[in-house]
Image (cartoon, rainbow, N blue to C red; front, side, top):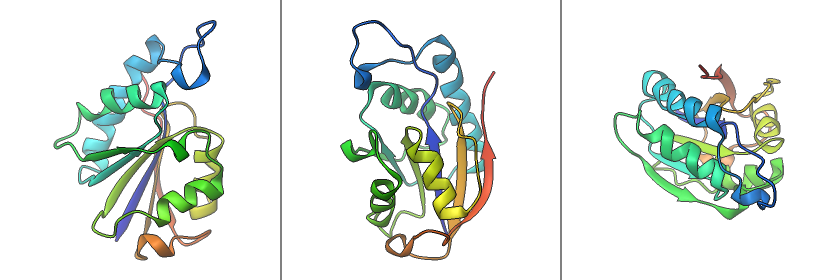
Length: 158
């Protein structure tokens, strides 16, 4: 069984004159991101790998999330996750190494919402700090639309 945890970054700030990719988390985002880690530690503690957008708000989300995990998985920052379409995100999932049984993908809307819908068929409102857990017996390369099951969702906020 493989699990894919799809996460939307925590709430970000909109500072004037700052490029979109460089936007940091705001105060609420810095408060909520550790709660993502606590939720993961309780529900999906066996994470093997993290694929994260290189955008500052996604990186900060991961940095604050990982502190709550029982062990730190490997992390890869992938440029193609930033601003990705559902087709791009499907390619990311299909290229995951088979040795990884549980993967966290930290990205952005609308792509992450569309990915969850495409894979699991469930309409999930991926708010900031939102999580969706999908599972399938298939190897990653065979994950396609409708091949996974949506098994859990959460929005860990304070």
